[in-house]
Image (cartoon, rainbow, N blue to C red; front, top):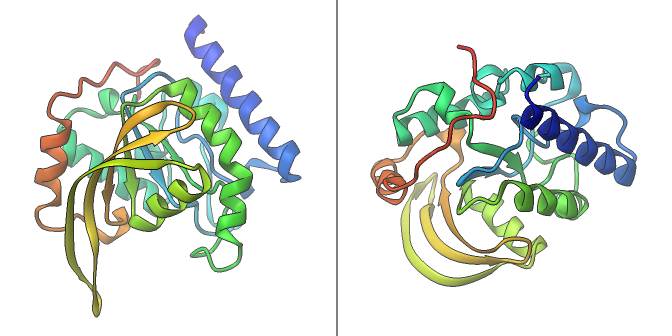
Amino acid sequence: MKIEVQEALEFKIGLESDFQKATNIQGREFYSALYSLPQKSPVMWINLNPGGTPEQHQVLSDDQLGKGLHEFWHGDGKTSIATGAFLQKIFQLPVDRLCSVQGTNVAWERSQKGADIDLRAAAKRAAPFLARYLKYSSPSIIIFGGSAAFDLYQEVHDATVVESHEILMGNWGTRQARIFMSVLMDVPSIGKVKAVVVSHPSRGIRAGVLEKCRDIMVNIELPVASTLCSG
């Protein structure tokens, strides 16, 4: 196994082990933290929290992640797969290049539509470990899947918006909601970083949002994944 792959796996296993000890969570099936082999990457996608019950999901093993698989393209979570499809439309690259994009959640504990846990409390429990992951991967752009994910992240991580670049509103049921937002954010663990907020990936890509995302990502050069994906 390549040295960098082994080091990445050791970081992931150590990070998740510390999270489990701190939260008394017993077993990988009860949470989702890192969706791929961790590595330095200019792009990280952060959703709100993993859904469903342990019985409903088969997460990828550390061995599978070490071989290059990624929850966004090789997992079975509906939101994860929708996120991967969104990223493919943005970057229009083969999966083996996209697998360097990092993915996680604001709250790591699994729930059914967020209704059966206190999401703010769960996000606070995950916060120090998510901060370690951000420092490790050092993204220059964070994409948030849904405004709820962005709002909760900003609150729990004491992140400050220093520049607001663009906000796009759109119909969301009977009300108007943010379907796209672009800001510059100051994050304590990594400093200033661009943040892009899109509507939740499971809701599909809203008109005009894809073009705005492509404009922002046009100069982003994704590295090759630490280990090549299959598929």
